[in-house]
Amino acid sequence: MSLTFRQMEILVAAAEAPTFSAAAKKLGISQPSLSESVGRIERAVGRVLFERTTRSLKLTEEGRRAAAIARELVQDFTRGLERLNRGAGAGRIAVAALPSVICAAMPSALAEFVRAHPAVEVVLHDVQHERAMALLRDGIVDMAVTLKPASGENLVFDGVAFDTAHLVCRRDHPLARLRKVRWRDLIDQPFIGITRISSVRRLSDAAFVYGAQTVEPRFEVEQIPSAVALVEAGLGVTALPSLTFAMFKGDSLAVRPLIEPVMRRHVGFVTRAQRTLPAFAADLMRAIRVRLQHELRTTNARR
Image (tube, rainbow, N blue to C red; front, top):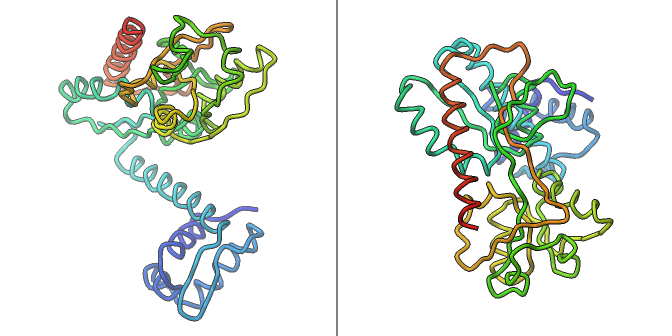
């Protein structure tokens, strides 16, 4: 099963319009042509994507998921073409980074970089690790600030720091009385988990597996602030790496190092092998490195 770029454009237009006629007008094609194209798309994916009536057009659940994927692919392709038109690396650099890295390091690092290179356009993608790697492999970004990738991917990793997992709980929680907390101490606690596609979740899952333990989250969320909000409400505890602390204030929270085992994420720069970055990229990487290391030192000193 494969779809052309034009078919993805048609799917996005149909998903965003109230009727096929409106979508067809936006695309500059006839309504019958649009209906036929949508039918081909549905046959290609093997799913009904639209609920059709004489007056309206409504996406099915599968249709909403397919439209979201198509929208992202169309946007990425369009950005890639814009980059080619401007000339790769000519006064522009695209960076994919973990949301925790964006919050912890990017504001100060970018402020410093922009002062030194005001004419350079910096494009940021705040995405999870797997998405960052896909953007890098596809040439959408020049570099990624994320976790160390698997070996043998024709990528170069330049490590910056290790991001250590901590327990996050309310200050009035019994575990907050401890200086350090063992992973096995969490077994009987309601656990707030991050979605399984997140590197944060993989960190906690690996720790529980290491101790031959199974912990099924009471609640599972996609965003760090959502997990923290549930912890603040007294609904459970969670485990988060140090860099994520920049994403929330947590005045009512306690943070304690997790041990047995100590779990760390190796965070750094990932670039494609044999790909020469523009000269100014070194200044941006230096600024990010300094801010990341400073944030982790400051966080560890506070805890």
